[in-house]
Length: 301
Image (tube, rainbow, N blue to C red; front, side):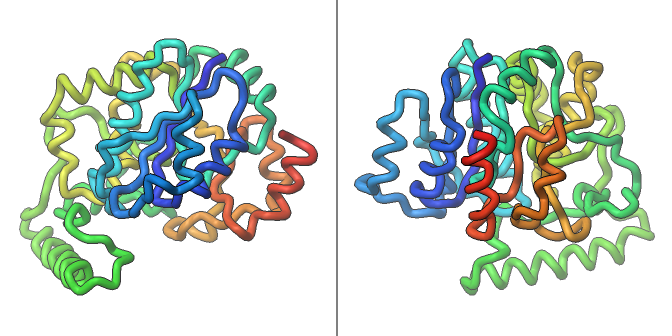
């Protein structure tokens, strides 16, 4: 079983080098997109170590990825295209720089051999309102300006656009009762949503690339939406020939305090959860995860 790991990250090479080291195993390939905002020194020791590994590819055409913007889709599609050049790959796995396995390489291989032909993706049909969930139609029925600013940046330009974006969204909310809002086009594929992170077969990823190429209007509709990565791939997969092969399981353990927070750092308290036979990977691993990582290295990897 051959795996391709697609890593979207804004972390420095040192952190990604250690991530790749923990994922290394026979028949594994790594495709890394470093956010363009992050300065990388070509003489950085860990960057050079990554480049020296035959099974590691670092994308040179780096994209300035802003939170919630379509640029996340652009970077993901670029990673998929690069990985598809390796026709030996069976499954591609989308990772952040804080994702790591919680099962051994053998367990992961055996799992995908057993379930070969299955597509793993968290998904649900998008209702007008998703109770207790942060994914709502406001993300696509309003114009969002995330392509133009970094919401976490203290720079004046970013702060100004962030406030303009907030005002713009409030004005759109006021206009909605009058029927003035951005609709999802009739005749478009039924909208699905779910977690950004997935594990899909080579064939499914190839279909996604072909679909985007053949339906540019679909891609264009997701401009100026919020967190498109939680709609885009689910909608393509659940309206195409792979629909019946998709199980509602991302294979990742991710813990949230509530529906709209960032994921919690994984610590020893989550051991019972990551022991689940269908949880192969975890997110997110941070400095607070040191004890858990040491446990996994002693007892799992």
